[in-house]
Length: 114
Length: 150
Image (cartoon, rainbow over all chains, first blue to last red):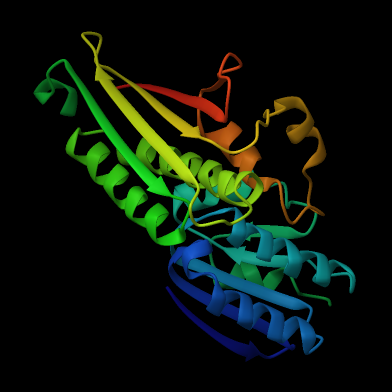
């Protein structure tokens, strides 16, 4: 699994993940998420277009980011196109803190006006 | 189209592992290979892999408390029948203290504030049925059932 991160205009953190996001490979993803939460960031885009599999540990970290964002009035945006990964996220019960989209353009719209 | 090339088959896969990440990873790879060889559709493999993964992680954490010497046995039966239907059963046996999956409680309590517990929701979502062996004297034995018609 590979993880990369960049801060976009508007103080939006985009975290891109490639491969399998499971407990076996969770450490680099967890480190990046925790770093930006500790830094006080609250606008997150997770680019999961190249994620092939996600388990409850990956979703648990999304819930941490989502709950942190919600404390500042935001939701996290997750870009996902793999149907199975999307279905897994849809049944994860994170809808109060997460918006699922298919493009980066739609992800950026989540933060418009904030 | 695939169903035209498949004959009625019954295949079985068995593994015994210790409760470690490396054993679980190897098990999952072999499990997926077994299902692929038997032409199980990829979306069904995904569902069963998640269910197996989440259940065994639960056993490792809550049953064996991450002790690496806990034993977990897995048996998988794939039955492709005359009606072009895959019936897949995944049986998982452990020797940890008894626990019972309370389906209603799990589905009710896990929400967006929960960091844990989500794995059990995923299991309940991705398989058709879960059968717990209440007669077993020691440990736990569950069976996941999933069927798909081609």
